Length: 401
Ligand code: PHB
Image (cartoon, rainbow, N blue to C red; front, side):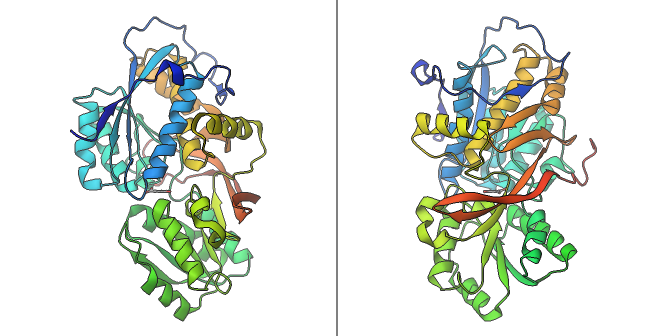
């Protein structure tokens, strides 16, 4: 098994006196006295460490570890160890990878992943084995829809959430006929469908829905098609390495000035340095903005920079909040994760003072959060307005709701 590494947190990596971890509100009565635990809690990190989503996986990993380090390497008084698997964003390997983590590696909790197709395979194994799973990115609507389960949580978003509010934003900006472009897989389809739902509800028309296979980056023919169609604007979903290339290709084709490019915020999150000037002026919607001027964000960005030398982004925030969510559960049971029902109840009731703003969870265990409109200015995703406050996913098909 070449893609596995076991990495206990090193003592030296534990930050002393760093900015405090996000604060948690655990409902009264759910807090248990700390109990002595000998064996550390084993956290399985199943993330993409290679491929087009490699940087996303790395930032989630860094965010998660930062939170644990700020808590002295313990959650709920229990020491944490890690085992990590590179899922390569390959759905075909996902079931085996997840089975390995919960079987051979005996992970107590799994944190993963980025890609919606991989995440759905993980959800199936988590449901079958009753393993506690926290999804720190993948937006697959079904994970907190028809496949929702008491032991499955998400610290990120559903694919519906950042895209539905964009429909009204673009219509109100005067765009009546819009083309969409994305990768042809669950996340792309669900995100563009959610945009279409919001946009047609507002009165707009989606004139063409362009796709290419994941993770291909040969955009030229599709960009030529957009130039022929001449829609009022374009809305898209791309992320990671693919998003960098798409934004550059779109600008190089000279379309940026005539046919404004919009997107789900993944288009410009964690990618701006590489996109450079090509990204300037792009408007996106997401549950984060770089310059959110709230204490939790300022402290997080400072601590993340000190730990990694990098500027935190939404992926780092989602990793950090996955650890905060686990902390809410572990604190409630004094580190005894065998008190499963109590732990899950505390996680479901958690109110996290996240770098993204207030974060709570619906009955399907999906975040309730603000969706912000941002614009790329000065190499940053700057806040324009709150596109929609406290956005709750409809959780269609979830029997827990
Ligand atoms: C997904 O596959 O759900 C996905 C991947 C990358 C993103 C957002 C969503 O940035």
